[in-house]
Length: 265
Image 1 (spheres, one colour):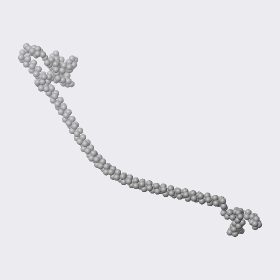
Image 2 (tube, rainbow, N blue to C red):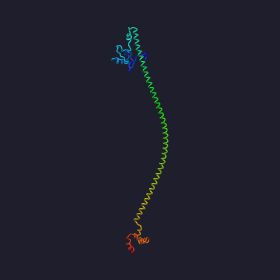
Image 3 (cartoon, helix red, strand yellow):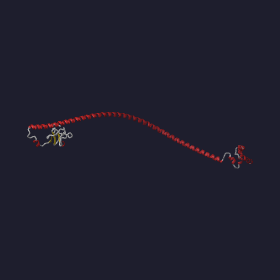
């Protein structure tokens, strides 16, 4: 704010608003807006909110109109000696220059504080950038190593896939051979079972026929049991072939009793 600016700023720390219409001026060369001046200067003891000075005098606090009328301007200094007018004007200008100086100091303080905060933030940002660059370098190294691993895995996968395809082809060949051998073994087994069944039927029939023959015609019994017209000749032929004495010697114990009966015939 330059000395030619039309308005001042409220000296209340949390306000800093431009003054308009009315303002509260203190003997310690501070000025406040109408709102904060009315709030702070309505209670006692009266203390300046800017410098904490006690304001106990009657004219230590004055409520001023910042845009006075033409009549007021014409009459406020009328009748005063020129030295008094100059003294009043110099004090008014001193107050204005003090406000400008204080505002300049405040702005410089705000600027220095902002610059220090900016430097601190730049330092923090530089440290963060360095750490991010280190992390980025580490991540790039990890990405490169992962790419190498991925390429190796791809090669291994292609090799394993090729081996798997070869194994699948071999398995299909073996499966075809196994199916053909199984079909052949099934055919051969079926033929053998059929042959065994036929042979079993033949053996069974032969055993049945032999059993029937044994039951129907015992050994050497037909010549003795035949009662046909040629019965006597068959009976004698058996005796001549085996010998009558031998036959009757190995017969049952009752054969001796039957000998007189046979001799009689």
